Image 1 (cartoon, rainbow, N blue to C red):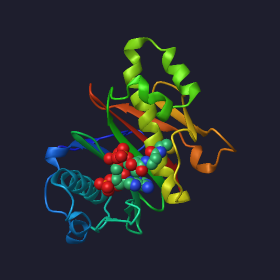
Image 2 (cartoon, rainbow, N blue to C red):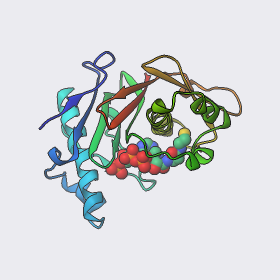
Image 3 (spheres, rainbow, N blue to C red):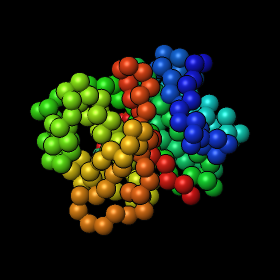
Length: 218
Ligand SMILES: CC(C)(COP(=O)(O)OP(=O)(O)OC[C@H]1O[C@@H](n2cnc3c(N)ncnc32)[C@H](O)[C@@H]1OP(=O)(O)O)[C@@H](O)C(=O)NCCC(=O)NCCS
C-alpha cells in the first residue's frame, strides 16, 4: 500500500498523518463500518472505505489496537476512545490523521484538487478581506492560494467540531497567511477561542493537490 506520510515535523509516536491514492486503499472494511455505508453509491462506498483503511493503517503505526470507525448520525466519524482523528477525500486521493487521545485534543485534515474555486464562488466561500488578498496576488498563484484557504476552512471545521459540536459557516471565520507553510484562522465576529489558536499547516502534495492540517494538542 503506497502511503505517503505528511508533516513529519509535527508527527511521531502520538500522531500520524498521511495521504494515499484512492485506488491503493481498497479492501474489506470492518463489518460495523460496512453497515454505515452498505446502501450508498459505489463511489461513495469507495471513498468511505479508503478513509477507514487509511485510518486503520495509521492506528496500527501508532501501536493502537484495531477498532471500527463508525459514522455518527450527523455524519461525523466516531473515533474509538483511545484516539481521535480526521479524514478527507477528493477525486483521486484520501488523507487521514490519527492521534492518541492523551496527546491530541483534536485534529482536522482536508485534501483538495487545486483550481476549482472560480471567482464567482468567492462571495460564498470567502470574506471580503480574503477576496481582496486574492486579487492582490500574481494571477498564477491565485488558484493555489484560494484552494489552500478553502481547505484551511474545512480543516478548521473538522478540528473544531468534536469540541464545539457546532456548525460554522464560510463567512464566520477568516483565514490569513502566516508564512509559506502556515495559515491562521480567526472568527469574523466575537473573541477567538482556544480552538482558533492553532496554526493550520499547508502542504502541496502534488502539482494538482494540496492538503491542510490543523492540530490542537491535548
Ligand atoms: C464535513 C465537511 C467539512 C466535509 O468536507 P468535504 O470537503 O465535503 O469532504 P471531505 O472528504 O474533505 O471530508 C469528509 C469527511 O469529513 C468527516 N466529517 C464529516 N462531518 C464531520 C464533522 N462534522 N466534523 C468532523 N469531521 C467530519 C467524515 O469523516 C467524512 O468522511 P466519511 O464520511 O467518509 O467518514 C463538509 O461537508 C461540511 O459539512 N462543512 C460544513 C461547513 C463548512 O465547511 N464550513 C467551513 C467554514 S469553517
